[in-house]
Length: 105
Image 1 (cartoon, rainbow, N blue to C red):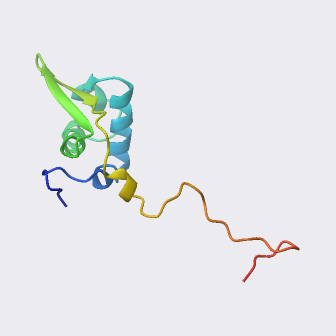
Image 2: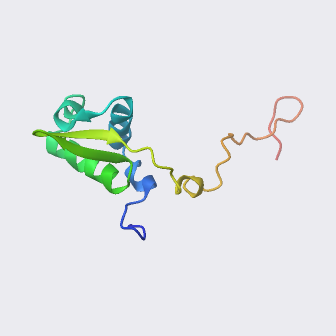
Image 3: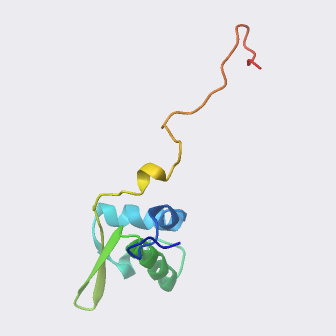
């Protein structure tokens, strides 16, 4: 799925655990792809593919410094998030407890 401006939705970009961890690493400090790859048990080309998905979603930026591609977190406002966890209020729904410890039916 691609949005009007050609970017992949944030929900798809963050659906994978490896991409969420990559995003966390570049949020801590910008670093080259080869250093990021050292933190993962996947190949460097796989890390590059995950970074491409994050870049297409607008969450990671890259710039070339010498022979290295340095990744950094893009902090642009996220407009997709309010609709992403549709209906999520941040609170867990818990069944009401009836007097005596049982749940109501």
